[in-house]
Length: 386
Image (cartoon, rainbow, N blue to C red):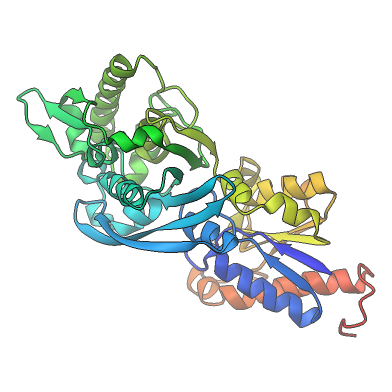
């Protein structure tokens, strides 16, 4: 029997790669002869680089990049081989993710996306021209000006002072000089992996929806929203394109908007990871598909990785199991898309215990699910346990 394991990470406890390892051990405990294909998933946020590199036997490049508060940090990006040549895989979460900033220091005025530009430039120096960029979990709300500044675009205030590209620079922005953009960008393609479809501005925009999560009070939100609107008008005047309303332009505090101006294409994050790893073809050869995430609920249907996996399984006529850390409000809406939905937590426990026992609980849940498959006569393999 062949299993394809395609879970997302269990946020705060296990990476998708680790989840695959635990699931594999549980399956083999019941079916020692099972064939297991591991395809760790992500939706463009934390773990995107690790998931794609692991699923494609890629490699990791280490570098030093600008961190969320402007201080250099150790960073990395992936390099994978595709039919059209090598491709760099980057993620905002590991360059300037919100967890990289202490709660007391969270303020999007003081955060920058410059690290993404540093990583893109490093990949360019290696000769790479194709990029997959995961957007999600960022601490920034700078409209991507930090990234663009690292790539050569110059931003000036009314006094002619060049701005480095922090959120606080947006209200000062008076003039943009696009002529110094790294000329190599013209030969590049950017596939933008995002699990949000928010525009740049408005009630569903980057600042109003995500700004408060990043430490912005009401006054900062209003200040940044007005500045982002003025920035969008300046970019429209330069490019002739009004891209602020594009779905996903508001991803990662407006980095989606900036990447669109570099010719980028925004695609559902899970789809990007799935296509990079050849998930559809791998599911076609499976008997069972197992997916999961830290917490599943009705929102999982809004493009999250486990639902993307379920849709591929449905299309291939393969049964899928959902094994998640918990099942929240509206989880019943998931039932039509899975052969079964399981929570790894089986009794009321505190958060500390749930986190401490996450691997053991996952192992037990998957083993129980596989035992049910075996006992229900889903397999005739002679190497199953009695």
